[in-house]
Every structure is written in C-alpha cells, then in structure tokens.
Length: 103
Length: 377
Image 1 (cartoon, helix red, strand yellow):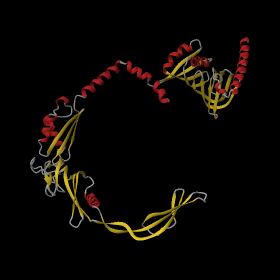
Image 2 (cartoon, rainbow over the protein chains, first blue to last red; image 1 turned 135 degrees about the vertical axis):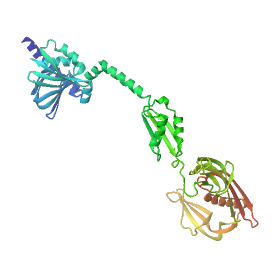
Image 3 (cartoon, helix red, strand yellow; image 1 turned 90 degrees about the vertical axis):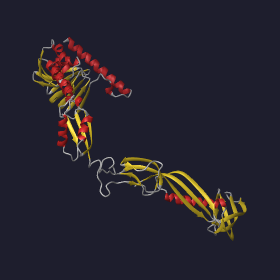
Image 4 (cartoon, chains in turn purple, cyan; image 1 turned 120 degrees about the vertical axis):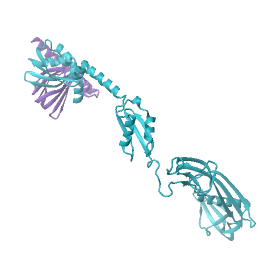
C-alpha cells in the first residue's frame, strides 16, 4: 500500500517535471518530442498505432493494450490488436484503434 | 522483409501462463525483438528470430510461464543440418570430383557447315575415333582438320577446342571462293593513269607492284586463283593508292576592268554628329570623294561638323594590269579549275606553278599537282 502511494507520488513528480521540461523546450522554440523521455503515440486513421518511448507492457489483449511510460499508463483500446513489432522502446500495433487514453 | 526473415530464420513460440506480459517485458529488456504478438486468452503467440532462442530459457526462468515452440521457419535449420551432415559433405565431394573428371573430356561436337552434310563429317571423325566422351588430351586439332580437308568439297577446316565443346568450322568451295558469272572472276582495274604507291590485297592476287606505272584500265588485282587451285575464282578486293599527276593551264589577259573616274562630278555635303557621318544625298552609285572644306557649328547644343566633298563618279574601264597582277590572276584561275578537278579524298603531295608571258601580253599559268589517291574500280 505504502509502495503504491510512493509510486503515485513519484508519478506526480514525473508528470510535473515533464510538463515543466516541455514548457522549457517550447520556450526555446524546440518541439515537445525532442525530449526523448516522453512517450510519443502516433495513430494513423484507426488502423495503426505506434508508441515510442514506452517502458514496458502491462497488458496485451486483442481489445486493450496498456503500456507503461514515464507519464503513466497509456491505454489503447480497439479490436483485433496485434503487436506487429515490439522492442524495449517501440511498440507497433495493427488492428482497429478506438481510443488512446493516458491513465 | 518476409523473405529476409525467412532467410535469417525465425521461430513461432507460444507463451502460456498467468501473466505472459511479464515474460514479454523481460524479453524486450534483453534485446529480443518480438513480432506479431497476439493474445489468445491465456496464451500469447510471438515470432522471434532464430538466434534469439537461446535467450528464452534464461528469461522464462522464474516467470511462471511455459514456452512452446510451435514452428520453425527459414533456411537456418536446414542449412545447419546439411552442413553438419557427413553424407552431404561426401556428396558434395563426389559431385565436385565428378565435375572435374567430366571437364577433362569432350561432350559436344559442333559442326558448322553450309551444304556438306554433317553425317559425312561425323563419319570422318568416327574413323579418327573422335566421338563425344573422348579425352580432351587425345584430340589433335591439326590431324582432324587435315582429315576433313581431304574431302574435295572442303577448302579449309578449322578445329578449335572450347572447354568440353569441339568446334569444327568448314569452308566449302562454293562459300569462301564463290564462282562468279561472266568471265569467271571479278578484277580490280585502274580508273586513271598513275604510279602505284601502295597496294594491299584482301582477296585475290596482286597484278602490279609498288612503283609501277599503270594506265587507265590496267589490271590491279586479279580474282583468278586458278594458279593455286584449278578452276577457282574469287571476287578481287583490296586497297590501291597511286600517285596521280594533274596539270591545269589558265590564261589571264593583260587588260582587266578597273573602276575609274569618267569625268562627271558634283558637290556633296555631310554632317558629322557624335562621330557619325551622314550624307544628305549621293548622286552616283559608285564614287570617289575628295574633301573640299570643313566647318564646325558651335551654336548647337551638340558639336556638329559640316563637311564638303567633291564626288567623282566611277565606271569600270579596261586598264592594263601589272606583270605581277596578271600572273596572280592567271594562277588564281588555274587554282579554281584544279579545285573542280581534284577528288575529295585526294591528298595533295606537291604543287608547282609556272607562269609564261604570251606574245599578246597575256600570261598563262601552268599548275602541276601530284596527289596520292585511291584508285581501282
């Protein structure tokens, strides 16, 4: 329980720092995705999703994929989802993508 | 991409357990690239590269997941099996030895002939013992060629051994030395009088030598080869160059037309503005000017100069030319005539011009040119 609280605190800290980092990047005229620590989700129509800079897989089913990232958990919902390519930094999903949410 | 995957080799595995994502995370942490990860209730199927199979065992340890290899794809396994197999190695050695042994023999005989039947040539070869399968070292090209050339229909036989193929090219009497209609042979004749400076015969027999003087119509290359073999004629071909002499004469009259004043004249005025001289009017077509006066008008914005001239009308009159001028005209006339006479490919070797003054004062130029040019038709 205590461990869970710590994690939540840490997550808040990371989120805050990431937001500040993003603001700093924006202040010097650089794009937000120049910070390679932040996750980058690319969705093409509803047939393809690409998640860069994830930190692990929490759940992988045909209708829901949950991934760890520095900003928290990324939840991708859809139908017939298959991870066509996967390594320690990138995950490529084929199938019908319905929603992407940050939990 | 799939072809490359197949070449490298990949394995389709199934991961069964309570929490297969844990194993997936371990695998990607260890640098294993996963492909086509698909969930089937409690089981996940994944494609991984064949070399990454070794990492599966260590990653699965303590994960609570069971791993099963569903199918292997690609060449890797087959190739490894074949290379390790002793039978395969022996077979490879036997195959290589067979190839080496086979390459020491002749396996094909190609006969290039036009009208002589191949069977006749083959029968000659059989008599010599030359058949498919004979050792390359036992073949003597000159002997085979000589035996084939014994046939009266054969003029020449060329035998070459190219790898495991024996090529026989036969020149027949009607092929290389075609008998021509009419007089029996076609010859090359001189088309002008000349001295032969170079002769090269491609086909036939040379009838002249270098340095020999020939007249138009003389025989240069003969196609009659009956001296070598009775009744044989060929189309004479070759290149013949000869020294040809050209002589041209041209006479120039002493008097020639010159523009001269005819006595008519009139006053003309010109205006010079910014260096440009403009004549207001000119009464004659051909004229000669003599300046009479010049006045500058300072009252204008720009300086303007008015010039006054005396214009004399000129008409062509026959006047006597100098000796040099007459000779030069005669030489030029001769040169023009010569240019029309010389063929385009003629290479001029020497040019000599001699001018002679006639009794009436006219000059005759005699131009002698020696050229090297191709002759023979």
